[in-house]
Amino acid sequence: MYKKLFALIAVLLLAGMLAAGWLYTDYQRFTTMPLAINEPVAFEIKSGDSLRVIARRLAEQKIVGAPLYLRLLGRQTGLASRLKVGEYELLPEHTPQSILALFASGKVKQYAFTIIEGWSFSQLREALAQDGVITHSLQDKSDAELMAAIGAEGLHPEGQFLPDTYHFPRGTSDVEFLKRAHQSLQTVLSQTWEQRTENLPIKTPYEALILASIVEKETGVPAERPEIAGVFVRRLQKGMRLQTDPTVIYGMGDEYQGDIRFRDLRKDTPYNTYTRHGLPPTPIAMAGKAAIEAALNPADGRSLYFVAKGDGSHYFSATLQEHNRAVRKYQLKR
Image 1: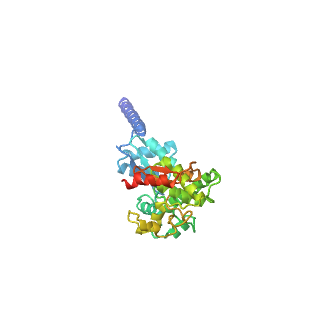
Image 2 (image 1 turned 180 degrees about the vertical axis):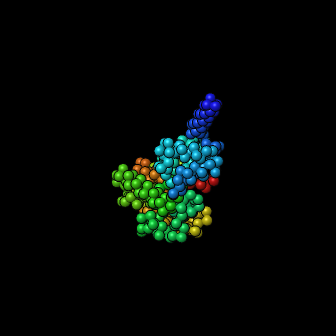
Image 3 (image 1 turned 90 degrees about the vertical axis):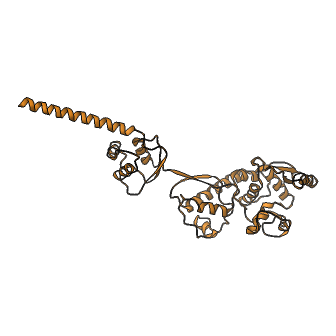
């Protein structure tokens, strides 16, 4: 009788050991097995979510297959209490072990929004309003109210945001985004101002930003920015009018329908550089870092005129006679 009992106990112990060994092997395999996804998946940890809730939701979405194992892994690694709120991007090569480390790192999924060089402020507002990741609170605000919201009260909004690609997590507000883009612009403008060429006919960083915005709108070939800036700087130094179409177009506002006419050049507005000397009162577009650098470090030379050649580049002239010949060649001929 005792032999049978011992044999049964031995069998049970062996079965238990085998089961424990299988569970341990299965658990170890689970911790390093790639997730059950074929493409990146966004997963959000919300405020108050415990590892139990997270594991259950991952299993429900068929991202991991054993929520109990994930909870055990969280306790074993000490990461269970260190998981941070946010939206994370899970990749097919991730494992349960690596996603717990990701959740604990706080490296949330980043989205991108690009401010395009040459955009107007109204174009920026329109594009930002259509972004589905940013949290919106400024739709019904006026331009002045928007600038006050980002801490730039009383400042004209045109040109006050640096063209660049910005990365941010879901839930970033439009106020936070615009404040960051404005501060980036101020940083670049301040740094470039300190490195400017001497004896420029530009007295303040704001005037430099105005000139940079004109350079930006006139530039079809990035390498031409310093040369175009040089033309405008020399015209300012000589007391000549800038006579640049983009400022006229900006001053026309909604009246501009894609074509600028001779009478538009003669109609006086604060932005018509054919009828007024000096710079317009504000920037006319978002100027990128390269345009700002060109405005404050223009190319040397003698050219006072330029005309579009039709391929995005320009022909530069030192005299009116040469310029008129270039107009006949590149503009009237076409």
